[in-house]
Picture 1 (cartoon, rainbow, N blue to C red):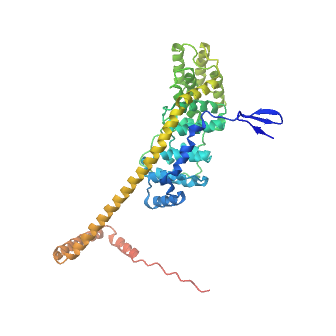
Picture 2 (tube, rainbow, N blue to C red):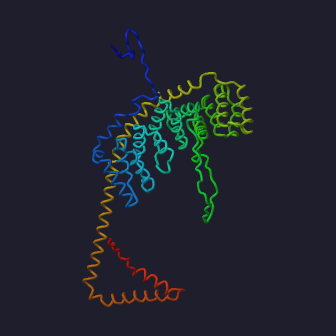
Picture 3 (cartoon, rainbow, N blue to C red):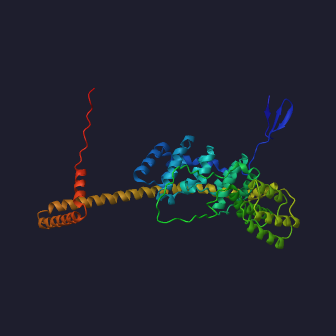
Amino acid sequence: MLKIFKSGCVVSRGFRRTVVQKRSFLSEAYRCEEAWKARLQSSLLQKYDPQNLFVTLDHKYTSAGKVSAVDIDIFANSIVEKNQIDELMVLLQNLRQSAETTNTLDSTHHAVIRYLLDHDYTNELMRILHNRLDFGIFPDHLCYNILMDTYIKRKDYANAAKVAVLPMLQEDYMNPITNALSVYACHMYLQNPDTWQKPLEPEDDHKEEIKIRVRFLRNPYFDDHFDLTDPYDLVGKTLVFQGRAMDDTLGRTCQLRGLILYKKYQDASKLISQWLNVVKGDVIYDETFNLIEKDNENMYKEEAPDELKQLMLQVNELKQKGSCKDSLIEALKNNVKSAVDKQHDVDIKEQLELYSKWDEKRHLTLENQIKEINRQARIENIEKMKKDLKLQERVLTFFENEEQIELEIEKKEALEKAELERVMRMPRGPAKLQKLKQQDEYVPPQIIKRKN
């Protein structure tokens, strides 16, 4: 018979076995699960059925070409079933293609990410996060941290790195936990970089050459930021971005490795020269030299460029200056733990406050939307009443204004006659008018079912 003790030990047939549970950097409390699930108790979210709401919103977009941001927020926060992902993605794209996308609520971003993560839609989640133009979803700090922590716990370092590059793209370094987890995720991913491959270039399957006349040709433009697609470039730039914020050995290690991955060899050369003259003590971690060589082998299967070969001579010179012999992985872990100790409780407190604020803002935004709809309805009703009154006035005063009405009719007839004469003077004008007249008088043939 098995007996389980609170100490975490399991006794079976006289033997004691210690049960070791996997633990991530963040505690379960950091996820604020109870507070997040409590949103479903909101009277506003309980008022709408997600399936019926989707049908209504999709029909509204199809017919009117617009959708409300608060309606999308209500749908995103109210869905709980796993099979509702297709509806969610459709509504996000509809919102992104309308002017209402500028009014997207912060709670919408949070709800979409947590829904996809809770139901393990990893591929769809990465597609949405890295396709900001079509979906417009931007994580907050809590989502960044929960996503990276989850994938790190699963040892899915490729997806953790895909999340880690997002703060760099947004140039966001405000949260210490996000910064520390980003650096850790990128270093762990580089241990097996084949798990994240560069997307393939689309193949041109057109057999015939199609020429299209255009007014002007755009020059090719590469912004070296949002246009980056190579994982080495993205991870390298992330390490550089995060390393610049750390004025220590770990920060310099991130910068050097990142610049080489990012193929910014001249910047790396200038940085090494500066460190050789300024830095006293350990410049970078000793493990970095072997990691850089491994990175170069992965990036260049055949022969490295001359610029890189020249840079490696400086790297060897840096190696002679002195480096930290401690474990780099332990330093990365300690960096994350230090950030968690500093920011853990602060993030939880701020997020709990945000949940209540988001609920209040959702109610207020919906109320304002209803008021605006009612106001527009009243304006349309007033315009209709004015039009009806004007028509009634015209009928009641017809005999008083009969001469003026006849003059207006004569003016319109004169204008139509002048336009007709102008058209008749045009080349082939009479023939075109006759053709238009035949089209107006066209009667489709009657289809009669033949008897067998």
